[in-house]
Amino acid sequence: MAAQGAEVIVTPGNPGMPGHVGHGSISIDRRGAEELEADLFVIGPEVPLVDGIADRLRARGCLVVGPGADGAQLEGSKAFMKELLVEAGVPTARHWTVTEPDQARTVLASLSAPYVIKTDGLAAGKGVLVTDDMGAALGDVEDKLSGASFGDAGATVVIEEGLVGPECSLIALCDGSRAVAFAPAQDFKRALDGDRGPNTGGMGAYSPMPAVDEELTEELMDVAVRPTLHALKARGIDYRGLLYAGLMLTAHGPRVIEFNVRFGDPEAQVVLPRVTSDLVELLSKAAAGDLDEAPTFSDDAAVTVVLAAEGYPEAPRTGMAIDGLGADGQLAAPFEGVTVFHAGTTRPDPHGPFVVSGGRVLAVTGVAPSIASARALAYEGARRISFDGAQRRLDIAAEAAQEEGS
Image 1 (cartoon, rainbow, N blue to C red):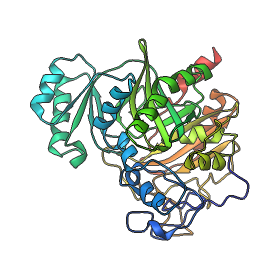
Image 2 (image 1 turned 90 degrees about the vertical axis):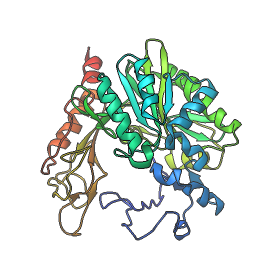
Image 3 (image 1 turned 60 degrees about the vertical axis):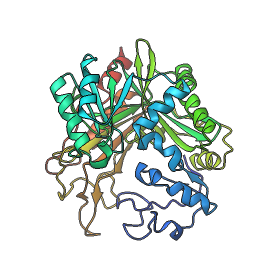
Image 4 (image 1 turned 180 degrees about the vertical axis):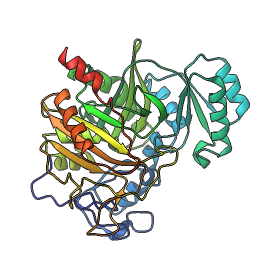
């Protein structure tokens, strides 16, 4: 997946990531972007992208995978995103941008359930409410606009009509003019089985999607991704980086739900393990504006199951020791086909256990020839890990595994 001999540094990362340098060792923020020299920078989180880190690094002459602050507004502002989609002719849900509760009441009164309420700004994937309850929708709008829910990120709210259909996550790599697709994936946003409970940053994912073949993938690129990239370019925005389209495949055709400006999480944990191309070379070409080929993928399937902290997403509890991991952060007893990706973990004692430090703690990914076998590996790997209050969904990729066998 990566060039032979490539050295990877992860900052700040966490102790479960190979190449991790530790919090405070190297700072890649508005104060310390000059501290690290590298041939290629791949910016992971959305917050520093919205803050302009890619602009500062490019000003130094660095190759960067990640949009500047102008392009990052696709994720940083849902109102901006919706405006651009309309401009580009990209199909999306009908929507209204409101800043006052009275505006919201008028809009909601004109709609039928389900009601979709979104913060305009960044909310770590948790700023969306989907509900059939008008009262709950109005209450959520008021909490967001008042700042009680998400501070300034909720000062503007986007209300959307509810859409029905399977979701698809399509991550594309862009070089400013061209875009190529990674393999489609499906993620599971709700906290509880059966797509119940509050929205989260994602509780699991799988790839490939049997219902989204190469032909449909190219159609989605032509309908959603490439027109968006062209609209950005028409505005003078040189977009080099990842463009993740969250799509709903409705009975009336695909609709864009959201755009992210980075690898999706947990989609990356099921898409990247299947890449057979030289990923470093591919990313470097995109950063240089010279993207001339699409990534290739193995025929294997990948399924990832997220282990989340007690109380996630509202008020995750932290500080619990994690059992079942070895010193390298992988399963204590090696298990072929399973990789453990760390997110909300730390290791206060270098010789002690890993400790829960965030809401989504670990993503356990299984890779195997079929969705069903990859799913079995992921759940067996997850079963071998424990910490007080751990929660996970039990239905990740269950329907896809059933369809595959029918």
